[in-house]
Image (cartoon, rainbow, N blue to C red):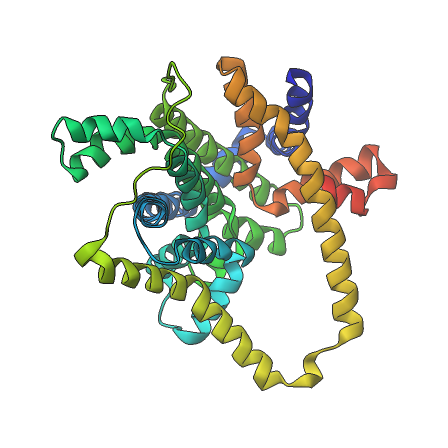
Length: 375
């Protein structure tokens, strides 16, 4: 497991090696000119505001929704859970396109935060809901027997046990915010990812885009450090296997209407607006837009690449996941960081790195499906 995780980590460092090679080739004077300028400071400020607002909102909303579906007597909880996960199937730029069609006034930081929250909320909801479903209810029962109120039990008993899934989900959201492009272009909010693509379109493979990618890597390292500090070194342990029974579901009572309103608003914002907009444009376009020969070929190619990449990615991620759970430590953290930082890079940087390498040392792999799946 360790050997496989190490090999995957080394391969994951290819884009970083490409960025460092560009930096070395550019020279220190060019680095100073391109990196230490007001535009980069503006992009950094935009990124900090985006992360500082989106992450807390996503965490609070994700935990609240997970609690409603897993620990209350909410009717149709399983259906609501499916609706809350469904936005993962909709690309963030499609969400932006739909909302931009309905409410063009929504843009800038406010628009970016709204679309980011509804697009990436499942990354927090899923691990928190999974953890809530398997917590030992005996701890909560013991707290209740000591006279603790429900809110105190949640804050002092349940919430500390959600620290790890909250950190994991927030990290995924943060990494996606660093690397997302289409969402922020449509919301007219400049980030490092949008600036990198703009630089690339201006000057193909110019040093400015790659050096901005280096700044993005530093942002990713800072985010990984914050997540590691929040996660800490403490681990949960218990002597027995815990209670096999399901936790008691709390009655919503007078909060039923408010809970349903929260669920309806969340599902409507993340699914309803997008589906309604897409169906409207399909209806307006009519049957003439369905060029089945082109659409069919694209769909088949997309499905094949998705299945291949999904299967291979899952297999390669399992050794790292095993080490994270069974053998945590400093080496494991370094390997994990080598895996995770790529999630903060725009696909363009990864593509440039692989194009440069295949052209120079592996020309038969240039622009092949194998290279795309590897990316």
